[in-house]
Length: 180
Image (cartoon, rainbow, N blue to C red; front, side, top):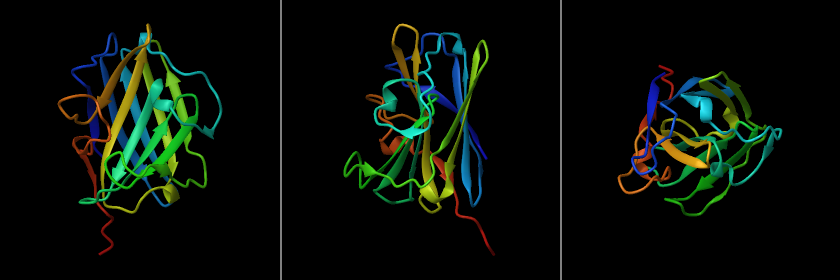
């Protein structure tokens, strides 16, 4: 599957982080596995370990996100995944409208691994929590660096301000499996 070099929104550039890449590693009957790689991560601020549990407001600190919607559809799902192991999942009926908690039977698994200048963040979301294929999707990241400096990374951005809910951010494509 395709690896995306995410870009920081021009209005909120990174201080020291030099790049963020993201990709879907695999999708099977049990799990969707994702990976984000943050380069230049020496000044990256990670939320402290908190254990696996649902929590709102994760985007206010370093957080990795997946947005998924059916082609041509208005509604979409959002998954927020934190290095603290906290997570959130929401459904929207349209652009930032009709927000509700998305049912997730098993908690996603979040695994950060940090070196001196790199962070690898792997996440696994139960396949049962995902909408059916095909998808238009967005892989995004909120990156907090020392001094409370935040940058907003996505495959594509709307021009005015960072907004991961904007249709421009749903730039990835994943087809339904071909069973022919």
